[in-house]
Length: 128
Image: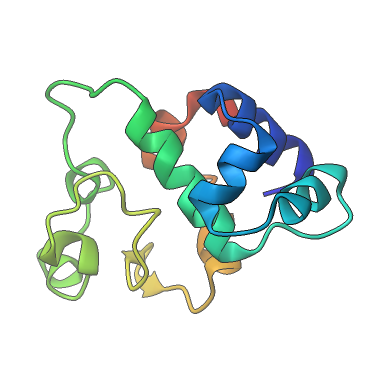
């Protein structure tokens, strides 16, 4: 997540820098640094911010869970944390997911894939 996207999400949530800092468990100075581009947004802050953004959006009725939308095989589902915990469409939030046949080791690699995925993009259409 770059500084512009971080700032856009914060404003969409209607939070000041101090308020979002409290929600993310970081200092207001850290938030200022993220938004100015002086510091990279750490994975834990990005993850929490996206989760808050996801919770703010209206629910979508009748949407299929990610494993059906992406056509995961029964074998893949058995090894995927999203299917195990029935996390439906917050697959982007949960580590240990199996996307396109393999688990991603780091948050950064996972998000590179997620940002291209229809499940993620439909959750955050204003970020794409």
